[in-house]
Image 1 (cartoon, rainbow, N blue to C red):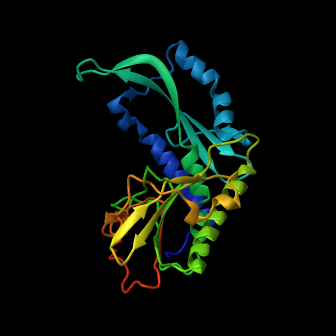
Image 2: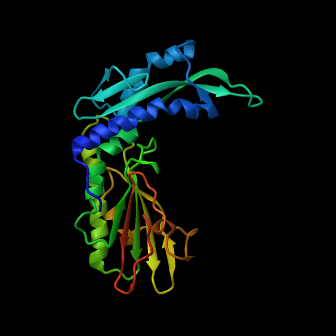
Image 3: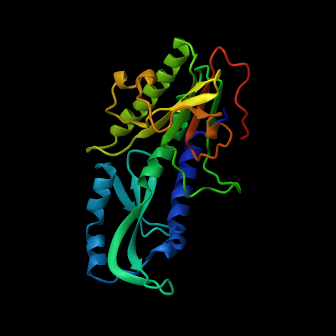
Length: 278
């Protein structure tokens, strides 16, 4: 597993990612929205209700408004940890024939709080897989194919591929990792007065080396309220629409995740690991 950046480096990088994302949101809005400079009653209502929006967004986390140098209309700094996030107010737009974009006069908020929080925990998220004897572990970083900081950092899900003949001890290590991920959610809960939507998703695949088939299980989510008895991979229901698929899992050969993780746990009957190119 790649070397981890220290927490200070991660937090500084997270700030740059969020700042860059907010600065470059405008080009994406050519597909359906435009940034309008403070006109109209609906816009002013958004400005007047911004603090309430941020309080709901952060679940009452202690924050303060700070000057923005990133292009974000409004930037907030968390008081109990080294984390900043931005909020913009955009106007919805419409076009009758695609030749000219018309503002609708209806404004909405856009923020990068969830991405910033998941990046804050990324180092600890990666450590949940350390020292467990997994055959292969991969976590994405925050850069794109050109080596530039990505605007689409997620870091909120992990895919796990397990040979069906793995030992009980190997499977227990996977369960232990899931409990460690849940513990991150519990720590995050401590920053909030109200419930938030902070969570991680798990994609689980059982692979049969003898038949070269794998079954996908239903995606499940881990939050601060997830109990230990809900984190046994053998109890996760089967996704009946993705059963008996031939060949190694797709993401075993092409991994391009940004912050997300992939874990391969090979069983006792496997003669060779899946082919993999990073």
